[in-house]
Image 1 (tube, rainbow, N blue to C red):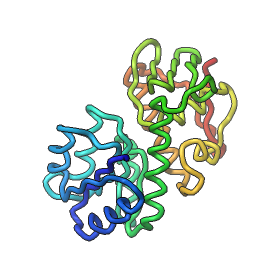
Image 2 (spheres, helix red, strand yellow; image 1 turned 60 degrees about the horizontal axis):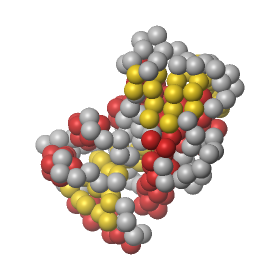
Image 3 (cartoon, rainbow, N blue to C red; image 1 turned 90 degrees about the vertical axis):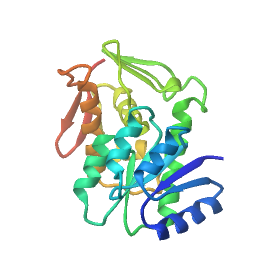
Image 4 (spheres, one colour; image 1 turned 135 degrees about the vertical axis):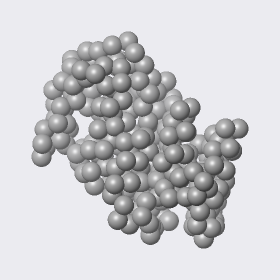
Length: 233
């Protein structure tokens, strides 16, 4: 049974969402501020978490930053209806997805399931010598899906599940263009709708992480109006 942490200062949301998730078979822990959640996470991390952004004591952005120092667990942000800046910033900081308030609880459940499935696959629950599971080397890049390990020029790079899947999809066929729609199919469940900005934000975050080990990293090329391409064989 997967354990989900809900962090939101709106008690109505905590109550209604936790009831929905428990009915779907999840174990749920609720926290009404970021500091209380962090104190609990320091003892034991849940399998994934849903954070509101605007909270007292410690907001969702700060909480995510603290979590990413020690864990790659999937995180979904809850954002206000018109807070596009928060969405983009959250993705750049390492969130895996976001859901706008007011939201469909069914949609939230589907996104949670999609992220957990990808986390399990990347962690090695899906075995076998396939393109998605075998060790891959492309130029300076090495990816080991079964261990969720990535290195560039011999230096380790820590990626979220979504970032890993996007890089893997691009690197599997160097020189070939992947459209945003194709990358959305790789990174998201068919029942989950995301727009182009979400993929763009993940790619920006991915490039930034790669440039922490190589400031000249340029293997991912943007083809404006078309998509992205990985250029190292």
